[in-house]
Image (cartoon, rainbow, N blue to C red; front, side):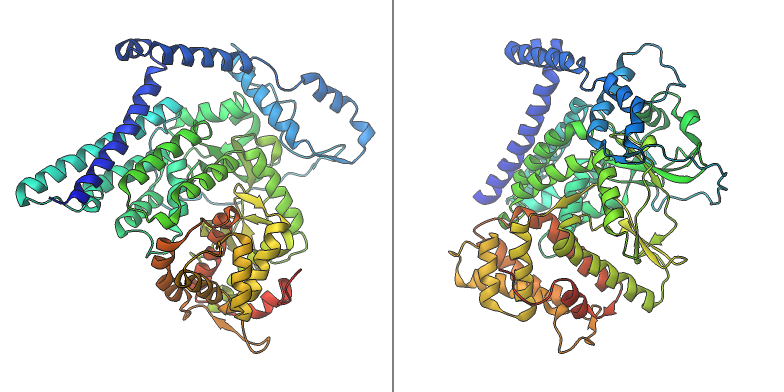
Length: 584
């Protein structure tokens, strides 16, 4: 019997038991009967005290209603000046939900006093009627209706049962294999058996939230990093989709926008979503006020409140298998996912990011950003203009259009790094549409936007310059300054890292401005892949925190260009935006 295999099975069992134990403890803290059975009176007492404190805090109004009325009554002082009230809107959002929970008889006609937009005072209203033209949008993938676990306790229970089921299958299959052959099986094979793959894919699809976010982050790793069975789970999860039943949807939107939201706010609203993503689903609708076509993002209930516990359980499950290489620094990836998920769950923040992008790209004719309907939005519901374009990888474009789309997205990515120092970090190709009528790339989903400090972007762009100039010494220097290297690595590790950096600068090299780079026949991926195993095994320090999201976006741009078989003047784009002169 292999001691190593036995130890790995033991680790899996311990990891599963840990998640299950936490699930039971959490249940116990909410159930007096079960608490008495377990006998941990202190745990129940602590949970009860914490719950009472939380309820007491919830009764405190975080926003004084009088201030809102005062702002409205004195609006003439501002004239047509724009008043930014995103921060006030978040506080007001909490107050609105407080009223929804505690008011016994809701007035269906009552309107919210303050919406989540930068308010234009004395704005003239449109008086013309807008004709609505458009066919019913069909979902991109087949959607399945299923309730989304909404409470933290319910979600923890699902993770606990998943861990218990996988752990039980591992122990059972290992024992059966040993009885038949006299040898312990490879732990990877029993963990990722067809039965467990089906179980994990189904459960993660139902849970959404953190499970899908981690899956999306890992899916942008090179194929040589992740085992094929892990890739299969990620593919299954991303290609399946559960959406909320009508009663859960109704309750969720009412909690954000108030009862009677359909009649008050929309002329029509399609209950079947056109998309179901990691933290929410997207519906088409028509506004009641101006009869404009919009899309409405509705966040799954419980996702925002369960981020920390979900990710802790996912980390336990993944680390117990010990199948992901240590050089991936899984804890750092999870920490990054934790921050990004909390950003993405805040739709007021996303509305603000969308407005910011619309302003940044106002003079960029190649791009368009949807309008936000702030009066139809809140912290977990976001309504925006319905764009007319087609997903860039699904359109039947000629090669000239593909080249144009790819070059513009690469240009935008470099501008985000160097010019704006503000990036939409989600490389999902569904976030980029192309409108053949306007000739513009339509940009979507600004929940995962982040800023980069100049103390990071300056050495990072210098590192990119070193890559383009094939300057090994400067590439190493700036890699140490950024924190990719410590300076104590082996020569093999240092060379592998520098080689990988220089390869990434290849598209932006050339003898003159007319050099066209052929992304279809590039071998960048293959050359980087040869160094991955060594770097994962010998890396002494995790990459800089900023690069987890930045490299995911940059990799997405490279992969898009390759998929579109693009050919364009990448060198000229780099020279125009970043240039080759090192910055001091």
